[in-house]
Length: 419
Image (cartoon, rainbow, N blue to C red; front, top):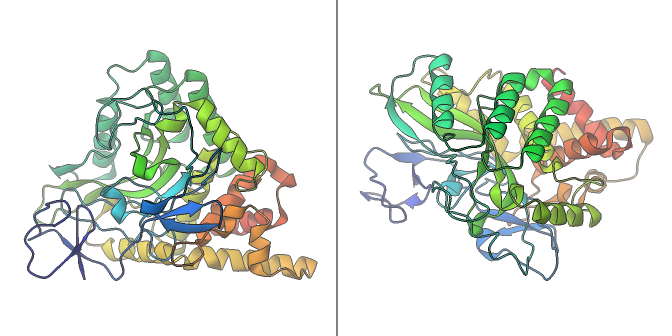
């Protein structure tokens, strides 16, 4: 089956234009072994559901994570096409989310008096609502001159800086501090409260102090306008096809790796605090979650992805060319299936069982971390990388007081990272 390189919709033979987005198809078809599905976490039954049928209840009914466009789990079987082919994971939005396996922190609370706060702009649009940003996270470029990592970083930086003209100088200073200290190429927190932005920097500091080898892979940390159909709190997007070359083959492609922060929450801290507090109290988050710690969950996905890259001996995905394209797709396939995440979980469980003679099954053991550690997609398949991310979130928050399952899993993760 062929798929549109722009939106990922299935393409019938001999079609010249995508029926969904109108994209010309003659040179932009993508062949994928399986089609991602769009799913969202349901608090009540701990399963993923179609994003078109996200349940809502009165009060704060926390949907912790939304895995959109995954193959079996939160994978990244993404389409990459010429020019605007988009590769996401967790991730993320409307048509672009169709080719995504971004990691999401999800919430579908029925905020009764929140009409103004959720009037966020559509993707790729400028600021429109009270809790929106002028930043556009998904600009794409075609026909650029790029031959080295330096060229790629310069273009990513230029795209980011060009959007900061009207941003407060205090925020720019915080962004520059994060960029210089933690090796993130582009940081865009324009409308965020300065104190909150500093605390986001502190989250990253705490993580990178313990995982110094993780520096240098995330290219973007950005606020993002999120449409109502994809209302996650935060997302990790390991692969976004940012630019293609002016060569006849369009190689090399520039790939961004991003952490996105939903403006409906990160510019509305009262809403964020209510959602996170309820999620923690109800057991969907690990105990003691804060308004800053959703970022730690996304970094858990990031570290898991880095471990997978190391497993495949893939040093970088910043530039994709003829030499590494097969490795590039292999890592998508592996992450999409969740085999490597499950391998880490089983290794950690084996260690725990050896040490304690536990009678818990591996799934019961995972479930001690949080309810979302047992998240499933809408086909009933476990999303194993959520267990990894929830373990990281738990250890980040609670240290030695984290659940045993979390500590054993993160010990294995560290070994895979060489930390």
